[in-house]
Length: 392
Image (cartoon, rainbow, N blue to C red):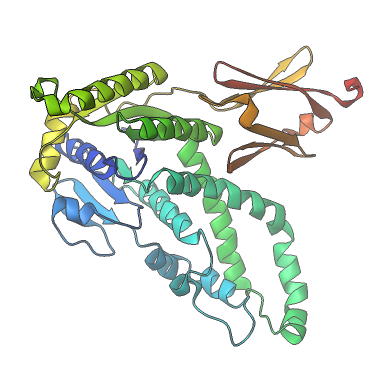
């Protein structure tokens, strides 16, 4: 069996943790070695299973381990040389432990992802189920490896040489101690891990992103945006879970309007996400807490035999040669042309939607081509590149 990663994300409060946990329990009962991981800083796996978790994985049942990742613990134990070296970049007298004081924004989320990569590379688990933070934080988390890798690719080739030449000057004139060889080697190791991590998360045969939503207006709209951004960064979303659906047989006038609202937005979700497998999770009249409550979700909602099957819903962006030059195709479901900003540099095309931006490296053959036209049709962005001399 090929190992897989399943990432559950959605707006805060939609029930990601309980749905991810139900998948993990179902997987373990099917006989697969399963790890349920939380990257949300407000960990609640322990609360859900009514146990106390520490900094290492905990065996909660046969073939199922729980793990609430502590990024600071991972930083201090796996990348101490790098963290120490970065700390020395601060002026003398102000140096401190960056991991302890959180002086490197975004690094804690990055190390949580790197730990998932390590778990995947180990032979201990067949399936890794990831309970992620709310949508915005998850998007920042998933795009961070590509963003940081882009900067390191631009800067690292001169990094070691610069450090060797500038280190004496920095220490004498600016009272700054540049990272030593051990720290630079660790940074290089991080760069290699970032590349592997990108490929792992975007591999359709390896990683599935699953969206959790509610049949409510604001949550539905955020789910659409979430899906668009996931496609912008090339992640494969292959499942939608509509949580807390009220039973039709309530026979209580108090719920009539609520049922009507849920039916309206449930229909909208089915129409908008027609390409995705959709799963419904009922509303429960008690808090989802404890193994029995998680088992109940498995029995009520996770009954399809193919629920763990990998599905490629949208393809990765691709370049196609045509009579005009080359065409870049990028899936952007639910995007509006008016909200897309695009510009080209010598080596890449930059696409920005709202607060999110992606840099796509151009193949060498396109270095003499310029964007000649852009159109958005049926959720696909078409970017045409033509030879420079053909531009007017």
